[in-house]
Image 1 (cartoon, one colour):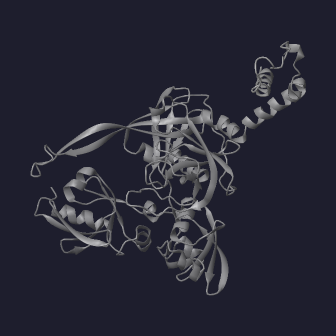
Image 2 (tube, rainbow, N blue to C red):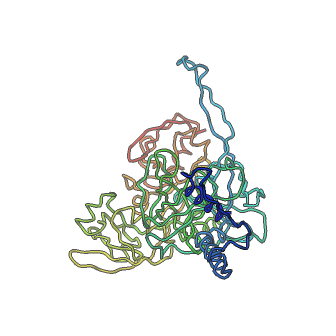
Image 3 (cartoon, rainbow, N blue to C red):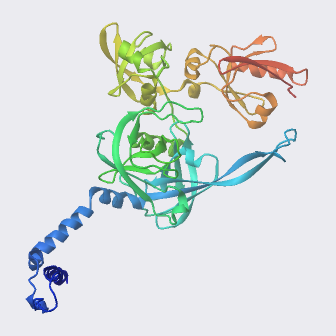
Length: 481
């Protein structure tokens, strides 16, 4: 047909200016067997080869990565209570505000790491959840149990009652190359897209080892992160970032944005950290924090690093792992775990990636010489200290030099409130992390003294407690029955 139309136009052009009398007679043979086919149609082998090339180009590495990983990516649907404060009238400024609670829905993503239903997601997805439903790509809903969550690393672990589930392939973030392809998979904007199948976006690794400066609303410590320009939108949180082989290398966690949508700057938690935290949450219900006994300069200013060549050590706790490893005040950390240490955020990333009992290889400067050393990481001093219970649901710990450094306390004495119940907190005005320094006229040097003083004061006049909070001394008065 194309050939005949072209011939018709050619004839018309040639005869455009001819009159009906002298217009030349043109005969056109319209038989199909008279039309010469194009060369590529004549050769069936060439046609099949071209089709194969097109099909092969469609089946790219990204397609294969998505095919391998997507069946293990789930949607995490959360119901939580949200407190609302309203006034009876916008103009009635003197009216007492009313408080009420309402159920709100939240959504995120996750991925299956064991065939019997262990799911990893972000802690900010599950925070405050009263009910969690995990939805598979096939649309099957499973009630989920929250095994544990860790706000510091922003990792949570869920368990669903299912068997023979598709498991996501596990990769490593240690050999990521800047510019290599990665794929972000998740459930952006929840059911606004009409079904439960995960969305796939592709990009490259923009950077590794990124540290995000803490913000006012940020509970997690986002350090040593993978940066990518693969589109990450609300609802993607907790989904996997996979490499070209379809193996998960990170957990999509946060974005930099002014509009609320993706602008090509997304961050993922390295999979090694996520798996370590998830394993501890599954086994213990909490994360075993590491302690080195090193206090460093708390600055993110890289100019300091350029001046001293590393991160300056302000203090080393006596008897701490760092002290036993040979470090002392004035030394400069150069590297740890094979990574450069330039700011306190780099050091925080190192501590997040080791557990108590691990051996930490370090390089540090003393004077002009580089030295090598090892630190055998221990548990936090507060987790090893003896706890004293008072007033039923208050747990106290005696403040020592190690605990002062761990909690960054202004004073090296008193009784640290390790845990306190809601009722006791409302009655006393105290809360977790406060340090009781003095009760009436008695200075507190050991936690056991608090219980003795409170027992003697029971049923008498109000007692006055002096305590430290955020480096400042405060006062609270209450009665002990």
